[in-house]
Amino acid sequence: MNPSVADLMRERIYSCQNCRNQISRHDDIISKGFQSVKGRAFLFYEARNVREGAEENKMFISGNYKVCDLYCNECGQILGWKYIKAYDDSQKYKEGKVVLEKFKITDASS
Image 1 (cartoon, rainbow, N blue to C red):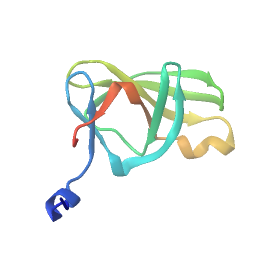
Image 2 (cartoon, rainbow, N blue to C red):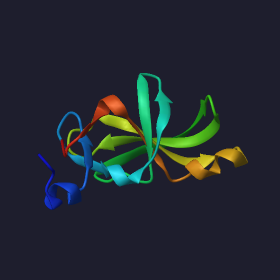
Image 3 (cartoon, one colour):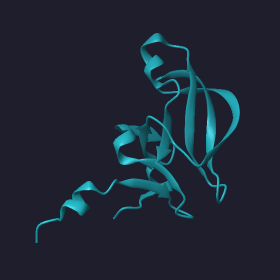
């Protein structure tokens, strides 16, 4: 069975795994090659319906960053983090971007 035009045009949305609050769009994925302490993670241009935690400096495998945790606005579950500042020039492209842990989000359009 061929998909309809409406099916092809439907936007893919990622939601909080816990409460289904819409968090980001599939089209906003920059990379699926990120890693968190607990598994795979995706780098997105942005996230919505989230609350930012306090800023702190953290050392990751790729360098030192100022980041803040991201929490779901609806249920308060931590979903990932946002890069505020990258101290290494080669990592500046991450500034303002967000990382969402794969096991904390779900594809709401499937």
